[in-house]
Image (cartoon, rainbow, N blue to C red; front, side):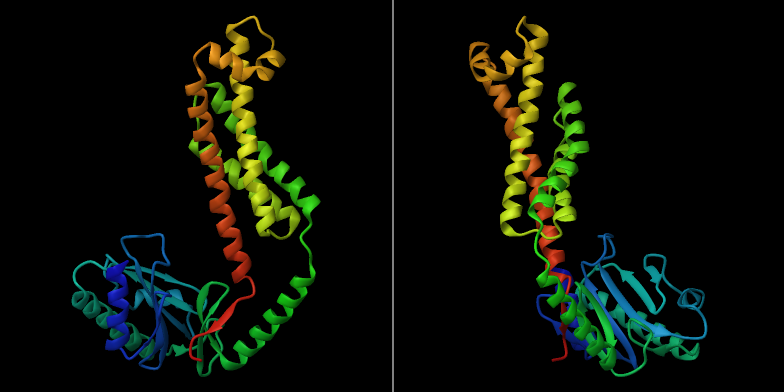
Length: 309
């Protein structure tokens, strides 16, 4: 990531572009075409630098791929008004900047020769406004920016009037935990603590609450964490009680009620608490990851940040 940031800083200087500090993004106009260069916006860790052009022409943008001599080590993708190249950051900064220079010059030359004109992310022509819209870096025209900003402001006000539905959220958490609880329990019955199942259980609780409750607040997030840990404890306790029932003459109710005493007598408490701790940690982790994602999405839901102001 440090190398990628150095590359972006060098690119901003070399190509007279603007850099957004802390955003891992460079934006501006190059040879009359609107471009955004950023890092970390792809799952392909081998090609962490992406270069996005916003263009439109007589032919679909995927027509460009037949005109460009794209090196095999690059990735190329298109959208309705988007052409994106993903390149590696291998080598030193100067080497990478040279490859970006060659790509920018080649691409813009082909665009001009093929009649492609610069536009914004929606295909509108006009002076560009670079901004972050709902977590994504985009290009808009001034008119389009004002229209979207006004609509988002209105939507945010309307959303603020909608209250979190706690009873429905709790119901959603219960429903969201059902399938994952069954999976966790089945794994426990065969003597396995499945990290995937436990993570899914924590995520299902939070996702179910958000789906039915409409919003997730700090208090409801705390509820989800407590519910995740409590449910994982219950599942491990039930599994252990069933295991005791299968090897003794005790019934399930007795094994469940006096579990701690039985474990002490059998000198098996340490193993039980190790399994319990691992299960609870994984379930809580699944909840924490999902909570962080939900809070991030809720924050970005009505977000539009203009970069050139």
